Image: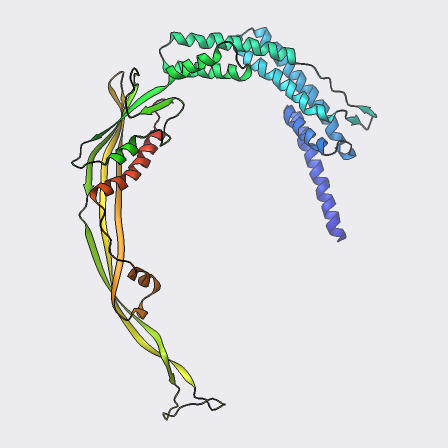
Length: 395
């Protein structure tokens, strides 16, 4: 017991030393915010515990060095006078504020060695943050508005990101939300989806509706919208064509296979006889019974109904501006209808359970060609979705 307690003490001491070492290493490597996080985590549990004193010292040191480095970086970026630095300046001011807010709840922190509180010189960065936010918002606003001179959809998507960022840091700034909506509308690709059947089979209407219902299939995304019916006054950027080249439906087949099953089974009992043919009795004079076994035999006939359909086609992307074929992907799918049932002739006790189960089934009507095409369409829909998801028209 004493050895166990001693081992636990040694382990805890080792863990504590390791934690202190990790925090100090973070400071030595310039990872000041990591050191602050580790120190705060320790001090939150008990800031008065003597063994946590090293974290008070390391927290103060990491805070001083982190603050000095950030303010020095801000000074450098401001002197550079490059408007592209405004976002970094804004983020650094926010980091300075968040760092203080993380430490504030722990104060005061006493240094046992001096009996005094550790000094943390906090600054109020609110005005700096507001000024940086407004400067950044105006810079991004002016830059993003130049997109309306462009005819490139990708430019509008980039401008949308800038406007969205402005709205995040500075809600309701000027007419940013209206400009976001305008950029979204112009930057969106509208794709007309068509289905062309070049086979000699009729594609069920409900399958065609399912395949072309891109909204229900969750294929629309923020920058791409698919329509299966053309909307008036809307210029479609691309056409996606689902082309069926061939639909092959097999004849209806019934395959038969015969099994002969034999098994030794218990069939009642008989009285035990000795070598002379006399009945054997137990100590109480009762006749001794033994199981009687016979060989059971059964002819088992398994029938398999089978019918298959195969679809061969293509998915093709066309650029409606250049009238060029952009990409083409093969699309092939197969659906097999299969139903198994069985009959038997003989002693069914010779059959295993899985054979017995088949005997409860009967033949069923074969699905119609229309139903087969509809059933294979479920797989076609999944493969079409996979092609579209993996091959975005424009990222």
